[in-house]
Amino acid sequence: MKKIREGKAEVFVPSESLTKKSETFYNPGMEHQRNVTIACLRLAKPKEVLDPLAATGIRGIRILKEVEGVENVVFNDRNPTAVKYIEKNLRLNKIQKRCYEIHGKNANVLFLEDKRYDYVDIDPFGSPVKFFPDVTHALKKDSLLGVTATDSGALAGKFAKACFRRYGVFVGKTDFPKELGVRVLITSILQNLAQHDLTFEPLYSHANHYFRTIGLVKSKPDKNLSKIRMVSYCPKCHSKVIGIESECENCKGKTDVLGPLWTGKIQDKDFCLKLLSKFEFVRKKEIVLCLEEIDFPFYYDLHQIARSLKTSSPKIESVIEDLRKRGFKASRTHLCATGVKTNAGVKWILELLK
Ligand SMILES: C[S@@+](CC[C@H](N)C(=O)[O-])C[C@H]1O[C@@H](n2cnc3c(N)ncnc32)[C@H](O)[C@@H]1O
Ligand SMILES: [Zn+2]
Image (cartoon, rainbow, N blue to C red):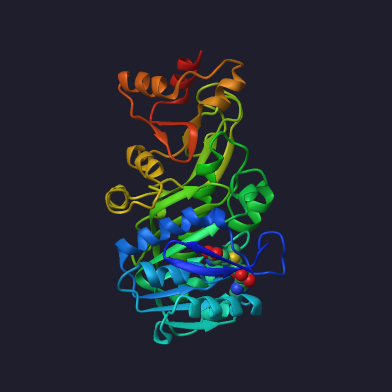
């Protein structure tokens, strides 16, 4: 066991938590997404928080220490070793007993109990999908939900069958795997919430070796459903069109029909602006990119397209500038360093890469 510091919390974590399966899990690689969570909660000001897959308790403890106005955090983990870590870490951080509860239940059992929360964080190993139907019972109207998924191969289109099995979404190999994964995750959250007359409005979404979204749970179930659409993707020329088109409008090749997929916003610009102006500890570059990013679904990965054209990729900035000069919207994306978002069709991208 060793002691580490993250944000304002100090916690005991197992020395080799990432390699030994029996031990409790702590991943220093997730610090950034916990930082983003803290910043989002400081803006949203939740009072009652549920950390149902708490492991060492790091996230809930940071919430108690770093988010003003939080009255109570309920910690839960079905692994008894994790529960011991949570108890020890709450003592280490001198958290008053009235501010927390600890449970060792299956998270889905806890969700079905009477209490409802202002914020619930779902952060499992692998896919979060088994928690979606029941978590709806634990969410207040106008609450916040944060979800992490690490089954990246399924979400990003590498394992299409697994994605269909888990999320009910047809995917395939594309040049926008990071955005595909984020959108599959949001689609699944939305569809599960909709069954309970709720909807989800993403505030911030990001992708790394994991996918993560945090957003508002609202009670207007029909509002967002029309933005869940099928998408026609051409594996040959990378054209992407919302709707079902069996033939690519650009190269006349056969398309892959993907979806259903959330095609609405994956972040809220006002919220990102507040994140940027108020918090030093979130990665500024990523938030600046988010702010500049056009709200248009799907990026084109210039490197991948250039590779398939057997040419070298021009500078992203010059492609963006050229597209803008031609009257199109164009920007970078925070999801892919070599990606460009634009409302111009693929034909213009191909033209500029030739
Ligand atoms: C990825 S870790 C959580 C990491 C933690 N949220 C953090 O930020 O460091 C997932 C945890 O969920 C627990 N877990 C998995 N399935 C569960 C379930 N159905 N009910 C309760 N706990 C579960 C595991 O024991 C594990 O400790
Ligand atoms: Zn095509």
